[in-house]
Image (tube, rainbow, N blue to C red; front, side, top):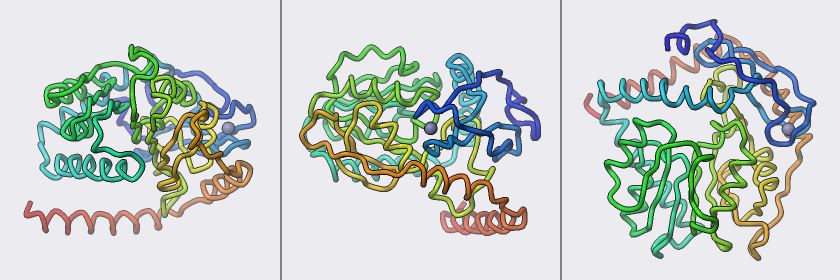
Length: 311
Ligand SMILES: [Zn+2]
């Protein structure tokens, strides 16, 4: 367990060397070897499409062990020190997500919905409250147990996406929000979502944008995020899994439909330019002084926020 936290050491996994998990290219190389905990984490950049990925890549079994143990420990710590701000944040986030979903889907309709990787279940609960037949699943037992306890409607399951038994065409809407970057087989996972989606269904897919940060460097990497997407690599993954574009909400927040849906628009991207930009941005050393300055400002903002909330 401690091995996940001690700086300058490797993470306790063997993994296996892989080619690009999105485009399959063998043209990739190491771009960084540190993460935001100042631990050793080898990250490769694909020269063909611009995807960042952990390499060696943790296996399914290693990822399962991590989610069963480490995520649970972090979750329990959160409960030993219950933070009102954290719970409020999750609830506000669920409201905001429902609001954004309503830009592409009539959420007042009695929809069958699935939250792929539902965490502690706030969004499933929100959709159930809207009258949806709302489902979700989550690999971490503590999270999914919490989600199940607090969700009246629908079902929350525990386990990996590979084990979920939903029949084809089960859902009008699937949401996958800040989950895909945790998976070692993103195109297969997206293809499974496509299979579970009704022919006229909508997938709401969102990941962190590696181009969306002011400071780019080792701080943007950590063990849980085995993939680092930007707009074009996310679109490529969706296209390979058989999706077309319904609406681009932000560069890495997309509404997608099956590619045989009449509403499906083609993706327009420039992978060579993406790879080049990612290489340039993440190769430039960000000076330690810039990081210290950035974090002092961030801590200052956190303290002011806490004071305002009377803690
Ligand atoms: Zn690639």
